[in-house]
Image 1 (cartoon, one colour):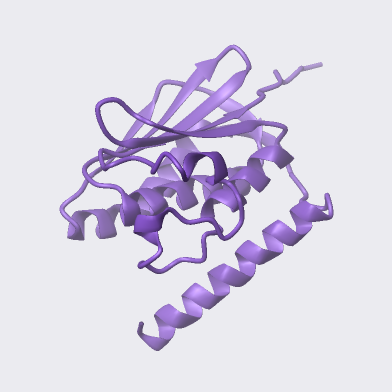
Image 2 (tube, rainbow, N blue to C red):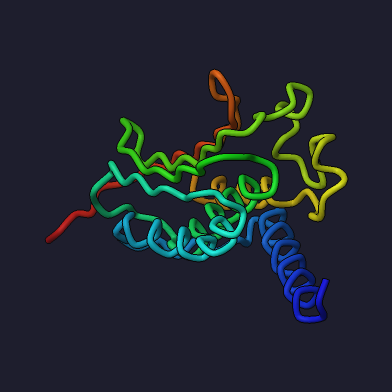
Length: 183
């Protein structure tokens, strides 16, 4: 790694550990506000566009939510960025980042067309320092999915990881979306 890349990696690791520490102490502050979901998707995808293009891959955004959600945009952007990062590192093909409206709120999904998750890894996917065997040779601390879970839990939501049929992986975040009441 170049010195600047090492610094960025160390800084990201420090930020990740801080999120986890705050989560452990129930001090992860969630500053919710009504945020257009398209704005969140519009921040995450361009961040990885050049890397995806260099790898001969695409990132597709599919906003079927079409509205605003009550959430901490910065934290949800961080969670989605971790998922796209994982899809770039460990998946293949097109990465689809989507938002849909579900009965219990907002569902955000990140999918790829790779081999999916190792079946032994799925039950521990969100544990800290947990990595699938094929990922152990790559860089990363195994904190990405743990960070996602901490952020989603602070939003009183759920996160799941699954394999897609016939191939690929999918991680879905579901957060409640309380309606805003106007006086």
